Amino acid sequence: QVQLLESGGGLVQAGGSLRLSCVASGDTFSISAMGWIRQAPGKEREFVAGIRWIAGSTVYADSVKGRFTVSRDNAMTTVYLQMDRLVPEDTAVYYCATSSIWTRSLVSPSVYDNWGQGTQVTVSS
Image (tube, rainbow, N blue to C red):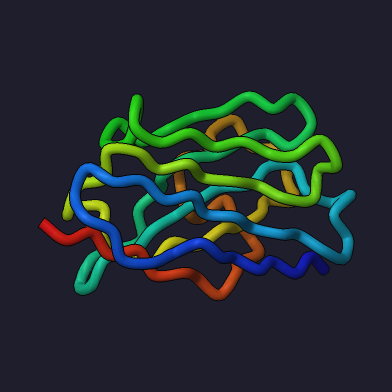
């Protein structure tokens, strides 16, 4: 079992930046990929960014491409989401999640089988 703990959320003005962190503990050797998924009030969960844990390759939703960057540390225990040029539409609870099984695509929230508790990001206009 992998435990995930997110941090870094908060309130920021449009155009600002935030960096989210997610620390993984426990059975981290079982991680195939990690992703950031967000959920705005009244909306379904939406994939934001993903990273393959060993290879380090990344994928982004079109809505955040060029503004957000996902990365992991060399110890392979922490994943980050650097969010720049934030807009009010980015307001949501952001979850980090892990996938223990290799899948061709990382963009569906259904491929992730372990989730953190989420951190709130609010972007004011």
